[in-house]
Amino acid sequence: MQLLDGKSCSQQIREEIAAKVQQIKASGKRAPHLAAILVGSDGASETYVANKVKDCEEVGFTSTLLRFAESVSEAELLQQISQLNDNDQIDGFIVQLPLPSQIDEHKITVAIDPGKDVDGFCPQNVGNLCLGLPTFVSATPNGIMELLARYHIDTEGKHCVVLGRSNIVGTPMSILMSRNTKPGNCTVTLAHSRTNNLKELCASADILIAAIGKAEFVDASMVKPDAIVIDVGITRIEDASRASGFRLVGDVDFAAVSDKCSYITPVPGGVGPMTRASLLQNTLKAYLR
Image 1: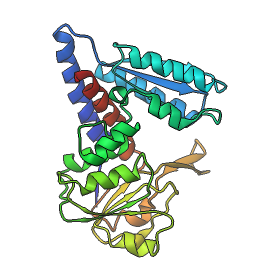
Image 2 (image 1 turned 120 degrees about the vertical axis):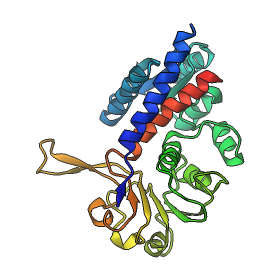
Image 3 (image 1 turned 60 degrees about the horizontal axis):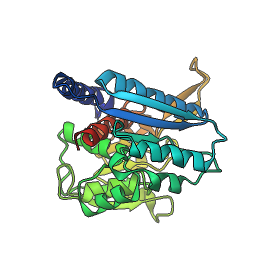
């Protein structure tokens, strides 16, 4: 078994981006600029956005964090998005999800200029992905493809099961893995919690991408010997043996599965760092456009 180390791989990507930013600045041009909108004080969102700001500093991007109270109105948020759309100094921006119940997330998503939608969530970018046109691919699927490519994993002709059908991960992942690309050229099955014979189906996969959002859902019986396992999930569970009182686990029971597969992503340190690196890649792409 070999670990697919997203932490070291993402570090390589950040170093590559930092070198490009140095060249940009040396030519007298401004640095790429990423903005983030954070509503409320959700702990996970606070941590995620703080990491994005840190990443921007590391590669030499300019970053702006716009904070709003939990009580912010939909109209106020839409007004802020309009201002970011019109600001030529902002190359890309994200609205950190989830949002409070008084705000329609779909309205927020469609209000973002597709050319600045570095999260790759807006309908135009999703549509371009489906059609194979140039677009911003959402960060997690893009990060997984980058991880497979950098480890030179042969995916052609393989059976890939994507477990989970979300618009952010599962569905775009299934499209990318089926494309005539490298990595890609898989025969893809998009499975979910209502799929019949789910365990047997997963156990037939050469490549299993678990993004179902259930802690340690995938056990050893669901993994084919020498399969490639990509664990997208991350859940905090209680653990009295840890000083923090908890530990992070993925959608895959790592201890049970790791000895059975050929490659596997750890949690943490696998897909998560690649997601963050992909956001930087998309921001640089937006700047260069």
